[in-house]
Structure formats: structure tokens, C-alpha cells
Length: 247
Length: 311
Ligand SMILES: Nc1ncnc2c1ncn2[C@@H]1O[C@H](COP(=O)(O)OP(=O)(O)O)[C@@H](O)[C@H]1O
Ligand SMILES: [Mg+2]
Image 1: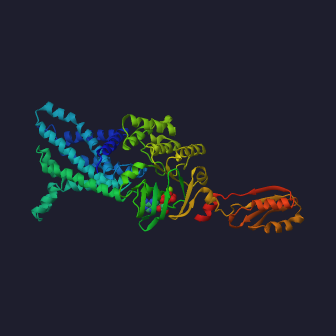
Image 2: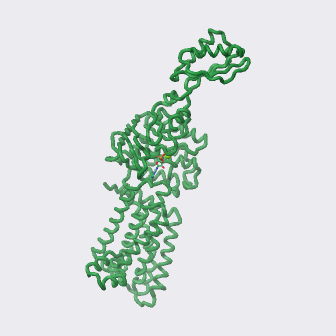
Image 3: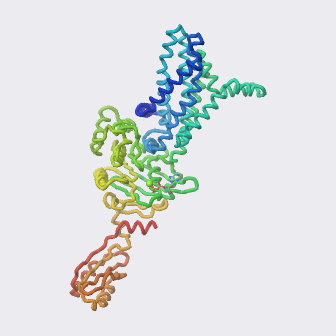
């Protein structure tokens, strides 16, 4: 049912389109700039006196909260606005192939932005001798989390032709997925709610899984969490596009 | 080749397409006529698989759009209304993308693209981004995209809308050159276009087919089809008797006075059931030795038929 050739063709077109417009450059510059600021100022990178990238990764959820919706808002909303959705969906491809091709291009694009932070990695290796496997899992965790945000954004973008609306809703939904893992939220529940519920809320959070991975332990459960979250939101996006193509 | 059965589309409480059925064969160029909002685009969107019908069937080359949408889409080239295309791509990149998605690779892909570019005359804008193109060129890019895979069925929603007369002529010539080996369905509200390119016309109003036939066929339904205009050089005093004689001819239903002055009597004769009366009129004039300055048969105009049917 899934034709990887079709997905590949769409993926290439989409990825190229990032670099055909200023979007790619603006996104990458802002991403690098902000991760630098967060790491060195807010994260007290130097004062930490430790050679690792924990300060760098800690702020990624908050960075993604604003940057990913800006990237994902156009995924489908723009196709609706320019009318190209009619062209795309009357080509011999299925909706799910289109959803996957677009998502993967955006995901790989965030991967590229992430890889461009390699000077950080060089810096810590120059300054000390960090555990590079922990850094590797940090990057992996960050990229998986970006995928989660993007999948939410794909789905929201499929619902509207208004990119501002898509941005705001994506950011709000993403925020819920971050907040549900914050200690203050969990403390609020743990005072009275059964432990099972607290665990459930926490297990839905990006933060819990992301933090687990960045500690250097790549647990299958965390991988499954992010991948099934992505699958769920993309499936929802497919259904939404199938049912409301025209408006 | 293309079979549409009782197609229906509802948007919420509003029914855009009530009940549309027709069949088109290879070699036919079908013109979809109808006022704005009649349901032409909606019908096309259902045939091309963009919209799912509320009820009814679409079958293209033996494949049902609901059960085998990919097979149908492979066989159709579609130019949606307004010819949408990715604005940040160049025509060359865009056609390359379409060719790949249509399954062409390598040398064959290049040949397809080159041939299409030549057919549509896109050479001069190949590397300019689509958003900077003029309306005419944008439309051409849309057409190029639709015919690149030499589809069995070509569906175009208002292909000449907004083009200048030369561009319109080009598009029509292109359509004519492809007509023989394809099924072509196009929508338009320019009636001369139907005469120029269509072998058949379907008029849609309020989501229903209200007329279906060859353009000649439809024109024959015009109120003044086969009406005869006759101008005689005769004295005004004879007018009454002349009118009398004309009216007594077989199948002449009505006589309209267009002018009655000395040496110039002008009448329009409207026939019963739009049948031909010209030979009767001509014979009578001959027999009576009238001096005929003008004798002219009106052909029905699609305009009139269109207005009569859709209002
Ligand atoms: N997505 C939609 N939602 C609601 N109404 C629609 C939608 N698309 C078309 N319509 C309505 O359906 C009717 C037919 O539209 P359309 O098929 O575009 O007409 P035409 O192409 O003949 O001008 C119009 O009244 C239009 O407003
Ligand atoms: Mg229309």
C-alpha cells in the first residue's frame, strides 16, 4: 500500500523547497543562535565546569516549542492556500504517502539544523573529555522529540489553511506535551491523585522520555514512545486530509 | 472510456451536484457549460478523485475511482481551476517532479519533459520561478503538467480563462491536435470555445445536466434557429399583400416587421418547430417576381440556447 518511491519523490521535492526559500536559512540561523544563547548564558555552560552538553540539550524542548510550529504550519496549510493540494492529491499517490513524504522532509531538515550545532560538540571535546555516547543519545533524543513536535504540527496544519492558526494551535498542543512532565505539574497531581495516574501523565510527556534519553540510556520504551506518538499524529493527519480535502 | 453515473455531491446541507450522468468515448471533446456555481468544477473534482462523491459512480477505462483510485489517476491528466503549481519551483523543476511522480526516470523522463516543453512552448521561462510568471505562462505550466504522461483522459477546468485571444487560440489548437486519441473534458463559460473545439457539449445548471448534444444539435434549439430575414425592394402599398402571402407559407409561424419604408420592406419569418423554410420563401419570391435585396437564414446561437435553458 505504501509506495516508497512516491514517498521518496515527494520527500525530495519538499526538502528542496526548504532551501529554495529563505525558510531554511532563517530557521537554521535562529536555531543555532538561540541554542548558543541558551547554552552559554542560561545554561551556565562554562560555570558548570563539566565537559558535557547537558546545558545545550536541556533547552531544546523550549526551543522546539516555538521553532517547530513555525516550520510545520506551512506543511499542509500552504497547499490548501495555493490550491496545489488539488494537484497533489490527484496525482497517482495516496494521502498517507503525501503525509509521510512531507513529514520526513521536515524531520530530516530539523536533523540538518541539529547537525549544524556540531561546533558545540567540538568545543566540549576540546575543553575536556566528555562521554560522547551520552552526547550521541542527546542528539538522538532531541531529533526524536523534534519528530514528535513535527507530527503534531503536520496534523494541525492539515486542519486549516490559516498558517497563524496552525502555529498557535501547534504550540499550545506541544506545550501540553511538555508540561505534563514538569515536576511542578506532577507534584500538583501527586498530592492527591493515584500514583497510576501521575505515572500516566508523566509517561505522556516529551520531557520524561527526552530526559531519559539524554542521560545516555537509550531505552526501547522511549524510542517506542516517540515513534508511536509520531505514527499516531500522522495517522490523524491522514484521516483529516482524507475527509476534508476541499475546504 | 469515462462513465459517470448519477453523481451527487453534498457540502453540508447544500447540494452542489444533484444528479449527473454521462459517458464519453475516445475522440470526443466534451465541453462542460454552465453558469458560475452550476457544479462543473465539483463534478470534475469527483472524476479526478479529489472529492469523494456523496453518491454515484465514476469509471475510467474500466477502473472505479472508489476501489482503484490510483489506476484512475494514472490515466488522467488534470488541470485544476486556476492552474495551481508550486510557486517557488521553476517550470523545469516542477515538470521534473511531475514526471518522477508519474513514474518516469532517466532518459525516458528527460524525453517526456523535452517533448512537453516543446509542445507547450515553455522554453523561454524554464528557469524562472513559477510565482514570477505571467498568467498565460502559469496556465501553460499547468497544461504541461497535465499532458506530460500523454494521458488517455484529459480533464481541464477552464483552460483558457483569463488568457488573451492569441493564447486562447494556442490552447485551442493544442486541444484540437490531441483530440483524436484522447477523451477530453473541459469546462468553460465561453460559448465560442465550444464551437471551436468541442464535438459535444453538456449544459449543467444547478447541479443537473439540462442539455447534452453536439454544438449544432444544441444550436438548433435556439428560439430563432432557421428564422429567415427577407428584404424586398417593393412599394409600401404592396406590403400588406406580401405579408399575407408570406404568412400563408407552410411552417411559417410568425412574421416580424423589421422595417417598412418605400422600396425597403424587411421582415423576419420565424418557422414552426425551427424547421427550414428558406426554400419555400425563395420559391415564393421567385414566383411573384419580387426584387429580393437580401435573403438570409439565421443559425441558432449557443448563447441563446444557453440563456434559455439556464435561466
Ligand atoms: N468546498 C465547498 N464547500 C461548500 N460549498 C462548495 C464547495 N465547493 C463548491 N461549493 C459550492 O458548490 C457550488 C458549485 O460550485 P462549482 O462546482 O465550483 O461551480 P462551477 O465550477 O460550475 O462554477 C457553488 O455554489 C459553490 O459555492
Ligand atoms: Mg468552476
